[in-house]
Amino acid sequence: MLDKRQLAILCAVGALFWLADLAWIRLVPVFVVGPFWGDLGFLVSVPVAWFCVRVCRRLAGLDVVQLVPGATLLVVVAALLHGLALRWAPALYGGDHAGRLGGAWLLWIYGLILGAALLSARDAKQARPVRAAMI
Image 1 (cartoon, rainbow, N blue to C red):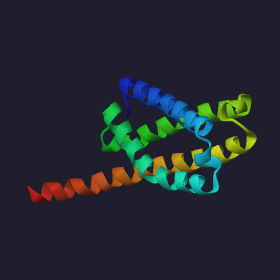
Image 2 (cartoon, one colour):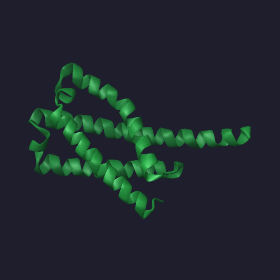
Image 3 (cartoon, rainbow, N blue to C red):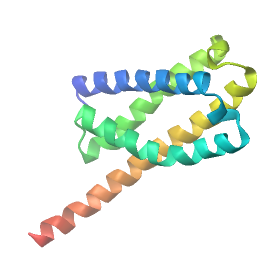
Image 4 (cartoon, one colour):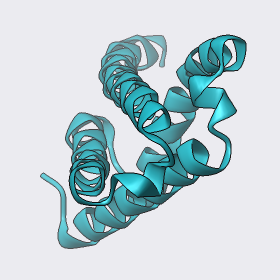
């Protein structure tokens, strides 16, 4: 279970991720809407997702059991903020085309973050018995 400090940190980081995502889509739309750069943006999102999970784990001090719930909370906060903004303030994302393709990228990166958290937790759980057996 996450404690109050971890909940606060993860909610704050989720809000910061929302702002960073919004700035990315608004200020550098070529990495979302461009045919080449948009595809490259999707590819670059894979290591970025792993980095986000590491940041989430380190900043909130999450152990292996807390990693998936923690990453999920972070994604929930960011996704809800995006949902509100896309519904009632879509101009924040630039044009309609950038908002639509930006929404696709958001689904992609959030799915990657959740998948990275699942894999990281699984790998850490599997590594624990191996380390104990080696000692």
